[in-house]
Image (cartoon, rainbow, N blue to C red; front, side, top):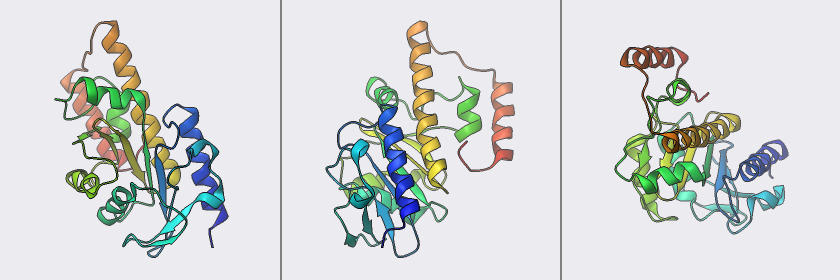
Length: 216
């Protein structure tokens, strides 16, 4: 039996992602670990803007389908839950500016973080995860080096992933990631990126350590 309150929040997150142009058509997926036995996950092949509570599927940590038609990218979600005991929710979306950075600058290891105080304070940094074909186990394998240290990541030439200890934290990570990528893209077109001083960067990193692991 689906818990209505959790399912409703998943639907709302999908609607918010679509409204902010981070999902198109049937793209993206959201999952929530209800307990050790049940994980709610959005369905395959359905536009998330029009998804209903009754569309949500249920799987377990061993990838057994308990009900519904779960996302074909669920192996990636399951890997996050296996590697991150604190993870309750995983959001995967296709934020345009974040993806564009991985296409235009494939040599980058992370989104430039020393330009913006918000990136350092909110997430520390945002790494790029090596491309993997959607729906494959390789997507989960490529995440492993970044887990559980990072909660927001850009999936090269594909999308982005964020996880959190709540639905709101996971959503906030995706919103923060795309907003930062958009600011950096605008700065790049206006004349180029400039960094904060190293003294200021170190001060911000210390503030981040005091804030803790959660995404702001």
